[in-house]
Length: 382
Image 1 (cartoon, helix red, strand yellow):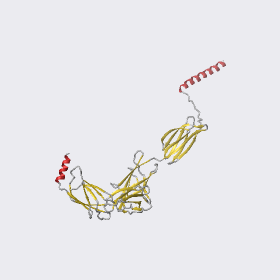
Image 2 (image 1 turned 90 degrees about the horizontal axis):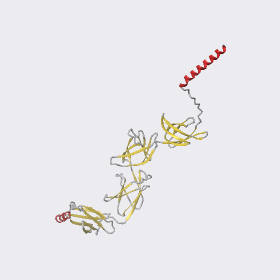
Image 3 (image 1 turned 60 degrees about the vertical axis):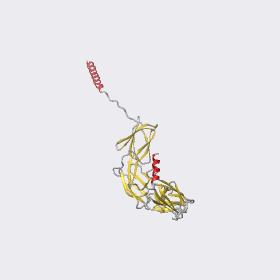
Image 4 (image 1 turned 30 degrees about the horizontal axis):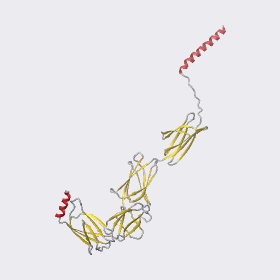
């Protein structure tokens, strides 16, 4: 309750300020008979559109924080406001008709045949500069909003502050925004799926006949300077990787630099391998090598489709009882290579080598046979 006591003392002891309100219509003609409610007091404007409130206290050091204001007049939109009074002040308010009309148009960039979807249309009162609720264009670049029939407005599209468009009622207007001369730098960072920087990626920004190009450095970064604000298509290309294309927007930022981050995936194709013999499909193992290094070892039963990064590979197929088979294939991005490999039955003769332990036995046996024959011929002669 302490603050209530302080508020009462402030109201009793402070001489207060004088606030004069002047109410005009859109043609700056005074409005007589407008009812004003301010700081829990009421007044009606005179023939000059004026109403005076005296002894308005300074509420800046109280929990109330200020006074509320309402201005009403039949046939006009009400005005609601709130503010602090710390000194004598004269304020002018403009009342607009409560009869509404629709204003519509199409936003285009640089040419009338280039409508811009989903851009912000900022609306302002042409007399006071007051900011009104903004709208977005639809997928065809169209916008519309309702406004008092006697209110003049202008719009600013997105961040193109230097271009104001004053709108009229009763017809759809085509607003052509010039993007030339309003530009920002674009910083593009490119990495692979393991988040490693990709060097020598060709970067292209294109909008109609306007094209900007660059190439990433060892950090995977390229900065394209002074790109006019607008909608572009970005393309990223690097050998061995899938080409990336996406629409992007270049707009003003607090730093003056548009930062964009992208990821490139390795380009891949497929090989469909069928392994068979004269008697049908064969269960085998395929060893895939490239540049002298083994890349994969895959079991294949009959037919198998294998996904590989683009490049040249050697497929070596082995199966028990069959001669090995070998093929070289070139994998192209997005394409399938079919390989039919027929294995032949193995005809190898297996030779069993003599064991070293059999040699002495052969020598003894041979010597015994020689002595036997020698004794035989000796006995016959006698």
